[in-house]
Structures are given as C-alpha cells and as structure tokens.
Image 1 (cartoon, rainbow, N blue to C red):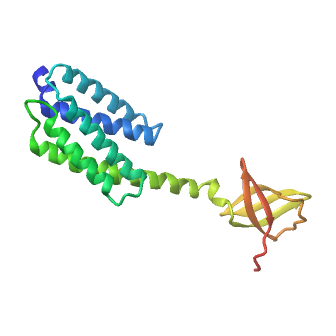
Image 2 (cartoon, one colour):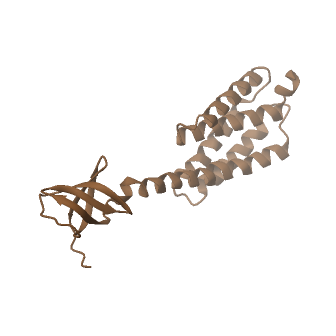
Amino acid sequence: MMEFLISPDFTFLLMCIGLYGLIYELVSPGAFLPGITGALCLLLGMFAINEMHVNYFGLLLMIIGISCMTAEAFFRTFGALGGLGAISFAIGGILFVNRGVSPWLIGSMTLISLGVLSFGLKRVLRTRKRSVSTGVEGLRNTQGEVIHWSRSKGEVLAAGAVWKARSSDDHVMKKGDKVKIIDINGLCLIIEPSHQTS
C-alpha cells in the first residue's frame, strides 16, 4: 500500500485532483465536497512527496501551469493562457520526480486540466452569472402591471408573480397601469409609470 501511495504516477494524480478540488471550492464556495476531496488529496500528495526525491522546480511549473489554465476561464485570452499553462504543466510533470511520471499520464492529465480548468470552469462562471440575471435581480428594467394600489404603494404583477411595490416618487397609480421596475429593495419593487403604450 505504501509503495503504491508513494509511486510517482499516483502522487502526480493526487496533486492534480487536490488542486482541482480547491480551485472549484474557491470558485463555487459552499459545495464542500470538491474542497474536502481536494484537501485530502493534497495532504496525501504532500505526504508522498516527503518520501520521494521531488524536483520542486517541476512542481512549481505544474502549479504555474494550473494557475494559467484557471486564469483562462476568467480572462479573454483566446486560448493563449490556457495553451501556455498546458505547456508549463506538461514540462513540470516530466520534471516532477527523478523516477519519472508516465508520459501517457502526463499527456492525459494535461488535456483533462485544460478541459476542466479553462473550459469547464468558464461554463461554471457563466452559469453563475446567468442565475443572477434570472433571479430577483433580473426584474430590474422590466415591465409590470398594477394589481392594487393605495397612495404610494401596492402590488404589481411582474414575471408571472405578484410583488409588493412602491412608487419611486409618489406617482399616482391605478389598477391596470403599466409600470417599469427601476430598482429592488429586498423583495419590494421600486417602480415608476411606464411610457410604453399598450
């Protein structure tokens, strides 16, 4: 068991999985499973590293490579950062330990890293942005219709649901009036008369 744990291939794999887990936990906090899995894999990987002759320059190149591939998800570099990261990661994998990591494993993990970090992470970030725009915040600058109104507050039908609302400037409203949602305060819509005609 110990020989398997401190084998170059398995240690290389543990370090990669550990870094993936921590990166995904940082990007999507609250999932817990990626973070816990990543931390455990990194701890096991560090234990194995202490029992091996590791080239720390190779390990540094791997970390730089993973950082560049992760940055590709956040910045528009049209693949430049991802490609540079993949090259750095592959060279780091080759130099990682004196006994050497399998070239097939290095190649496979380089491609997986590029896919998971540069493209998979980008999709996760886009999904998060989309969820904000389709939630309560997505009501801003949309149209609604007054259901009930008294003085400066009442209820408005918007996005298929009835919301509490108040006027931005004590506008006089009546049932059936079209309104524009200009802001949101908690779950109360701030509205003004819409100039859109029926």
